[in-house]
Amino acid sequence: MTLTQLQIFSLVAELQGFTAAAARLRISQSAVSHAIRQLERELDVELLQRRQGRVELSDIGRQLLPRMRGMLGLAETVRQEAADARGMRQGTLRIGSFGPTSSMRLLPAILAHYRAQYPGIEIHIDEGPDRLVLQWLQDRRIDIGFVVLPEPRFDTCALLEDQMVAVLPAHHALAGKSALTLAELCGDPFVLTEAGSAELVSHLFQAARLRPNIRYRCAQLLSTLEIVASGEAVTLVAEMALPKVPYPAGYVSLPLSPPVTRRVGLAVLSESEATPAARAFLQLAARLQREGRLGV
Image (cartoon, rainbow, N blue to C red; front, side, top):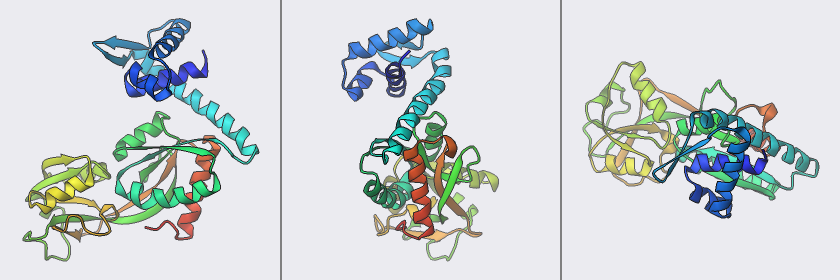
């Protein structure tokens, strides 16, 4: 069993296909198939099931995947600790990011300083809903991720706090109020954005024993704002997720009453076991936060 075989298996499982994994690794599809067959033969189990052109994990494959990714992560930590002794001139950092707050407000500022200090580190960024970033961390698909706090399963570092705001069409009957209650958002069609704090929004309504009239679900915030601006629905988002210049100009945002805050930070599975590249990113972000240099 080699690290190359584990890497190929992990990528086939992630991309759900031999062809896609081969393209990502820039090797032939036959080489991918051979590596998987050798790994299955050595372990004497079927890791992947081929069904009508699709590739799915078997039960034992699903069970072993996190352990194999842990082995790959440990190998990367060893490589990076060796590189760290040489000034961390090379290595890989896999970052998970969700929504505009982390991808547009936090990540660029941190990356600018990080790249200046560690130009040899190759950085991979995956974007998805907040709950998916948590799953990526748990599955060791990423080294570090932006998350909504608190998140007791991981070692975390808080970076910012903002408030949740109601977003209404500009000509809505409630647009002139100074603040809105959650109950007042339940009288109109509601659009739920899954680009950021969808879990937090759902939890807020559940805790208040309210049920918004969800008519739309959007993967992107700008699509959500377009629907609101057209007069089709209202929504609830984090204030810092909104564009600095309103886009489109057909909506207004109002704070909630009582106010609801949201904290965003970085998380790793375990800081003591994180790769040097991930620890350096975490420490740099914490320092920039203390110095007020995150540009939010």
